Image 1 (cartoon, one colour):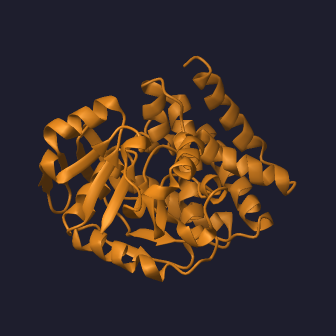
Image 2 (tube, rainbow, N blue to C red):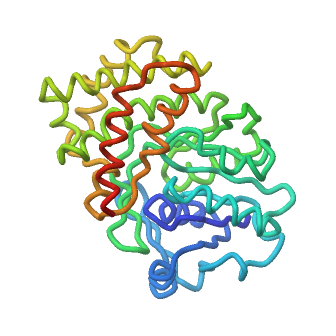
Length: 316
C-alpha cells in the first residue's frame, strides 16, 4: 500500500509512523525545513503506546508535486492545518495523476466541512473525513509524540458514502497502538469535537489561559455557555445532529469530564497566536457563523470571538 502524507506536523508524522509500522510505503510532502529534517533523521513516533523509528532511507520525501510520479498512491492523508485546504485541493487537482484510479483522500483535521474544498475537484466517494481527538505533540520536526488518548480515531464520510473500503486503514492504525474505527455517523462526532473546540480554543487564546482556567470564572463560563447554545441551534437548523440532544446535556459532560480531563491543555489556537501564525478559526467558529448565517440563526457570540481572533491575526 502506498500512502502520501500532506502536512508533516505532529498528526502527519504520527500517522505516517503508524501505518509505516504496519508495512505501508510512506511518502511525505513537506516544506523545505521539515523535508530536510526528515531526510536527515527519518521519522519517529513516541509518547503513549508503541514507539516507532524509521530511517530516512525508508521514507520518500517530496517538496513539490511535480517530482511525484503518476498512479502511485492508494491513499492521501490530509494532515495539514485547515488554512492550507484550498491550496492543497487545487494542487491535487492539477496533479491528480499521482492518485491511483481507486485512490482516496482522508482528511485528518480540526473543524467541520473541510471536505468541501476537495469536493470541488474529486467525487464524493473519494473524499473521507476523520475525527481525531488523540493528542499529538511535535517536539522536533521529524518527531511526533502521542500525549493524550481518550477515544478512537473515527473515519467516515460527511457525504454518507460507505467507508467500508477504508477498513484496512483503520486496522493498520489500530495495530500500531492507536485505536481507529469506521463510522457511518462521522458528522455527529465532528460536531461533538466542534462544540469542545469552539467553546475553548479561541477563548483560551484570547485570555491566554489553559482550558481549566476558563471554567473557574463566571464571565468566561457565560461566554462558553452562549457559544454552546448557538452551536446547538446551528446543528439543528442545518439538519445535522450530535451525541447529545440538548445544550444542557452537553454542558453536564463538558464541565464535569471533558474540561477536567484536559485541564492543563493550551489550545492549538493559543499556540498559533504565540507563534504569530494564522489560526484555524475559519474551520471552527467561522464554520458555525457560516452555517448560522445561511439558516438565520443568531451566532453573535461566536461572531465576537471570531472577530477578536481575526483582530489578533491582522498583525501577523
